Length: 95
Image (tube, rainbow, N blue to C red; front, side):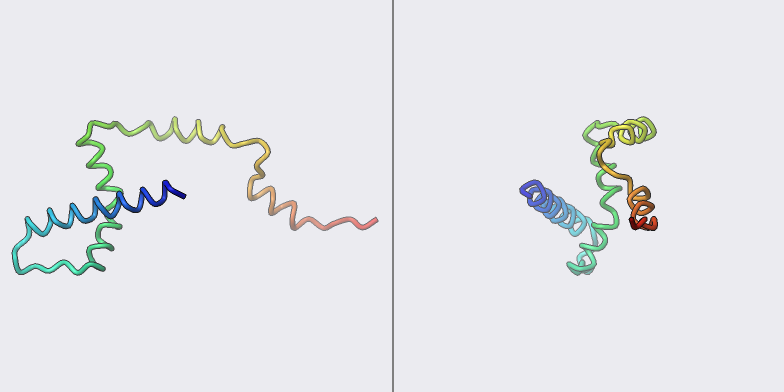
């Protein structure tokens, strides 16, 4: 639960800093309503993370290798949704 709080605070901090930067670069008569800024920030979050990663020198993990590896890590005891659904809709035999 604590990690979610940290993530929210970090997001808020980054959003505010970027808003300050955008406000500084924009013409003085331009207004940035908080709701509109929040929606804009949210819709560009993935791009912001990508740009920040490049700036900091992080390379993205190889996607296909990551997908293959993560798929193999699924715990054997954890049922797959389709299997659970198929089992649930099977007619039960009464003795």
